[in-house]
Image 1 (cartoon, rainbow, N blue to C red):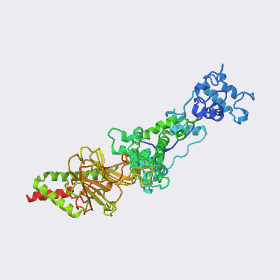
Image 2 (cartoon, rainbow, N blue to C red; image 1 turned 180 degrees about the horizontal axis):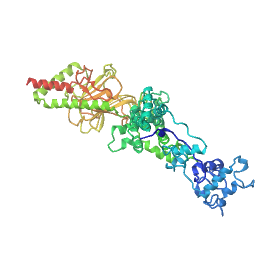
Image 3 (cartoon, rainbow, N blue to C red; image 1 turned 45 degrees about the vertical axis):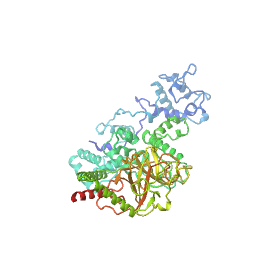
Image 4 (cartoon, rainbow, N blue to C red; image 1 turned 90 degrees about the vertical axis):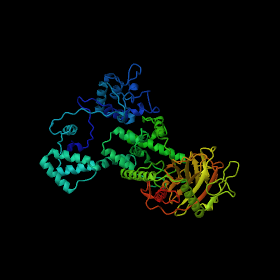
Length: 633
């Protein structure tokens, strides 16, 4: 249970007095910093008499029969002798410095030396310690341990505590502190009546209710979101907005669930590196993706990529360490405990993010992951079950006879011959499935297709169909169709502009960009398993739009899962076919046909998105053919 006193924020500084021990950070460091460190501190260029008072070992060093500080013996400490000297040439600080140490400060220095002259690191580097409870006269007033700190200071100043707040006032304060929202008039009236009936128990229950509210996590998340710059846009010239609300929700849920602080930090720093990370742990790493992003044409990509890494170091330092590291990026600083070496050791942790310096012209910048909400995940699971049911129905269908399969193949070939233009075909008969196959060979010039015959800008989209049979001698990555140019400098505005279809380790990969790799899309199939010596029919369906989800890949009539990649391997490729890519290839362009009315696909962007492809081997169509064939038998 938490009492009403738990919501009083306390910020006090307790001065040294009586039997209280002197604290170096609280009582002594401010005196030395103000009056001594300029000549006897961190700055070697201004240091005089080869004396440092900012480090204990130097302050206690033998200076030839005496020392500036002699622990336990203030009367033998040179610092006390100089502070109390009446000799104008000996007294410290020098009169010309216009600095003065008061008698009260000298008394503190004496007490500190007498107690052993203990030094402390800067308070930011010290672990928190529980302070002993101070003695108070009115012990009944304190309801919580920290109430005694408040009362001790009040009694020292000869002040009395304020009268207890009315229940309605307390609930309003508690509501703003814990949820950021005020209670309603009805809630205020109900709480006042509850206090009258149950007393302190009503306060405890009200506090527990506020802590259980979903708005509690929202209130606590505000400061953390601000530290990570959640509300910022990309900045720079285009200043596009980003969508990071899935990370925001993770932060809110972490606070509401009472996640331990070490786990809270670990998952945001390296959730993706944990063993078998969950989707939520990967989303947590969005903490480091709220930095500014530049999408101005003509910038040096690497310059701004480096800026993003440095930004992560600064943000992590301020949010997690409670200090700034920005100065150390350029140099060591005499007053800074963080060195330039420390900065770049932190920098190295973040210097492996596969991102671009020029990015974010529209919405978020790569790398990105699909991040469906729990509700969307449930709907995706339902669709997986629907697909499994369809697969089960297909598996129960009677097996096709060889003549049936041949008849369907002939029907499809006839439809393709009648309905689609041939974009690439040998003049003389050659090996092929549909039409005369064209063999691509290293010794021969690559076959070309006029650009005018490939219209990828139709409002209804387009599809490219190929029958391919790779050679066993092919390299692991070859172009099937290419109109991309990777020559020239990556800084050129048209670098990598165009489109191409590649065969990479047996998978189909579609690349399309205005400028590679920043303004483009790279989509690769998963599970095509195209092997040497086997004829395979492949279709790449390109719907209107520029997202990876609008690129769909089929092999032998079956749609394949795809994934978006971040950047291609660097190479220099001219337009046209790769000079050694496949044994035989027949290509044709198809327009999109109407969608089967009842079939759906999995999509993180649009759930239950219907098919609208020209491929004639859709699973639904196949299912209907199989079932029809079964009924005829």
